[in-house]
Image: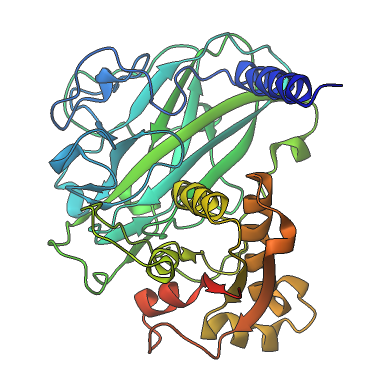
Length: 394
């Protein structure tokens, strides 16, 4: 078979597979990508097609195509790259002494739910950097009718029947990860005819657990006396078994973290290959070898650099932070922790190989935690040390 034909068939297969996955999700515009109007300022969640807020105070919408208060990754509440695409929403989920009204995001599902069947409800949240508080009770309400509150205020449920339509994580943890996405996930058995999803906090302040946070080092701006969360990639889909919801994925992380990322302006300066490679350093979250989506464009540029310089061979050095190394003492049989640097280097190598780079040009090494890029044990220093660096071998 002709190579080009094979590639075309494979591309079509992947497109159909992706389309099928999207069709299973009953949440329209699940990552807030399609806009109905022009996004110009805060309180414009209704600019995202199919989305609105159920109270008189609208939630926010942020975009990488905008700057300032509604920009991404940098905006009025902090810095966060989208989990998926270019846009994400933002809500106030808690404020000290209820001084700031909460906000919510709401959308109609593409089809009514069928009574007696189980559904997986999943979305991703990230606590904004300038939030002074982190809370639990970040949940989704699945209802027959849309929620409506004509004033600026909190939607608080008070009886068991109302809470029976609220989906939350089994552990109902406090979501305290700043500059990182966490998954809210749970299963829902439909009574039938449910048609709307609303995301927010439906619990009284007295029933909401909170954690007071110190301001992140080296982050500009003043902390706000509230818990403000970014929201992205919302899903509702039918499942045969509760295990199909994969709600236990990514719940092991024990400490708050950030994923380090540095943007370089393209000012046309001449750089050596070594300098360009240094700018392509890839950073990781705690105890994981998964490449964050924010680094994929950088790896694509690295693949192009390798394509243009066919004689270039690289050693990929995978580093871990000191606390990851210390964690092995408490979990000495944890294969991931023991080989974390190598796994990180291998995940980057695999990505480049999928981009057409010969594996013979890439070697991997576990560099451990003995060569930190930054001293100290602050979150920022540790984030700079969880990395893969590129060293020229030929």
